[in-house]
View 1: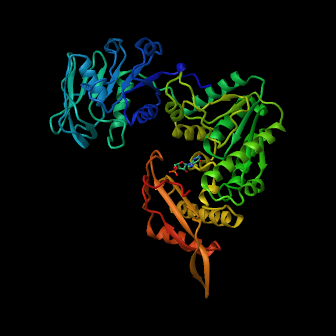
View 2 (view 1 turned 90 degrees about the vertical axis):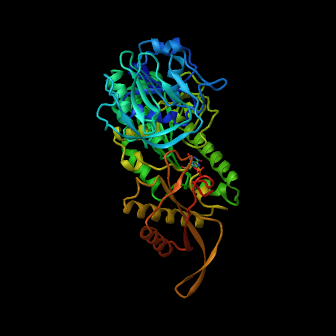
View 3 (view 1 turned 60 degrees about the vertical axis):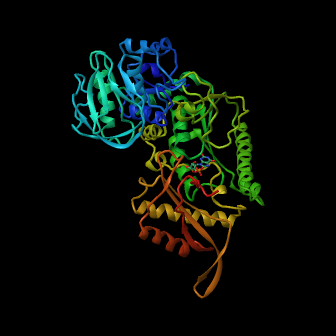
Length: 517
Ligand code: XMP
C-alpha cells in the first residue's frame, strides 16, 4: 500500500554495492524528483517499462576488471534515457562502451580539487565555481572517455573527473556528488535532473499526503483500521493519514507504558486527542508494566517482558473496540531496501511500535514504505504536527526500562526520567537540539558515596549520553560546551534526590552503543 510512484516522474539508482547508495536516492528526492533504488542486474526491459526520466549508476567497491564484477546492459546507453555514472558507475560506463579504464595501483581517497574544463551543452556544471572541491574515493580511473564523450573536468593530479556526451545525455563523474564533502553535489544532481533529464520536480510532501490518504481510503474502504501510536513521528504520521482517509473508522491507540520520557504521555494526549478526536484511544498501563518488570535485571529479559506486556495490553484493549480488518505500520524505505529492495521485494515486518502482534491476522497497511525518515518529518510538518513531534529523537520501544540499568524500580525510574528531563531542557535552552542527534540520561546500577550538606549519601551516578550521527549506525560523542555540561550536572544533583554524581560519556560508536543498556 503505497502512494503511486508511477504518477510521478521517476529517477532510478542502480545499486552497484556502494555504501552510500541510499544517500544518492535521498539526495535526488531532496531535489523534488521521486527516486527509487533497483538492483544493478534488473533486466533492462523491466527497468525501461518503469519509464524512468533519469538513471544513476552508483559507485561500488568492485573494479571493472575484477572477476564477477557487476556490470550493466550496454543497451541501456542506447535507450535515450539520461544516465549519470558515479565513481564505479562512471568507470563502468567507459568500460562497457569503448572508453578505457586503468586499474589503479594506489587509491585516491579524500578531498580533491577539480578544474571544470567545459560545461557541456546541458549545463551539468551550471552555476558551479570553476575549481570546486569534491570527495573522491577510487582506485581505477577512466583514461579515455568513450567515443562521443568530452572531458568536462579534471582533478588536480590529472585524473579525468567528469565526462559527458550531451547529445546522448550520458555523463560520468569520478567524485561523489551525494556526500556532504562535495559542497556542489546537490547542485550537480539538480543540473543533471533538470537540465539534462528535463525533470520538472513533482515530488513534494503535500502531494504525498493527498496520495497516501487517497490510497488508504481506496484500500480500507468502509472497513476499520487499527493504528498503534508510540509517540514517535512515524506512527503519528501514519495515524493522522489513516484518520484523514477514513475518519473514525481509524482507531489510534496509545499505550502509556510508564517508560516514556517525563511529560511525554501527557504531550501525546494533548497533541493527538484534538487532532484525532474520537479516533484517539489512550490506555494507561504503567502499573502493569512496572509490576511485570519487578525483580528482573537482565536487559534482554526486560525487553522481552516489555514486548510481551505491550502485546497483551494491545490485544485486550483492541478487542474491546470491535473488529478490524487492517493494521497500520510505520515501515520506512530503508527497511524495505534492507529486506531486499525494490518495489516487488518481500517486506520484512518492521514495527515502529515495539512488539506489535504478528499474529492478529490483520492486513498490513504501510503508507510510509517509500519514505526516508527526513521525508516523514517533512510530511509531519505538512500535516501540521508540532516540531517537537516532527523532530522527535529516536527512542527505544522499551524506553526507560533499558535506560535504567538493573531492576526497574519506581524510584530508579523516577530518578532516570527526572535527570533526563534536565538534560533535554538544558540542551534545548542552549539551542543545541538540532546539532546533537540524540541526547539522554541513563542510570547505571551502582551507587557511589557523595556529600549532601553535612551528610554522606549513597546515591546513583547519572550518565549523560549525547551523540552526533547521520545514521545512528556509527556516532561521535557531542562536544557539548563545558558550561552547559556544568549546568546540567549542578541541576541534576540539586534537583534529583538520590543522585550523587554526574558523568559524561565520551565514547564513540563503535565500540560503544548509543543507548546505555
Ligand atoms: P544503539 O544503542 O544500538 O542504538 O547504538 C541505535 C539507535 O537505535 C535506538 N534504539 C531503539 N529504537 N527500539 C527502537 O525503536 C529499540 O528497541 C531500540 N533500541 C535502541 C537508539 O535510541 C539509537 O537511536
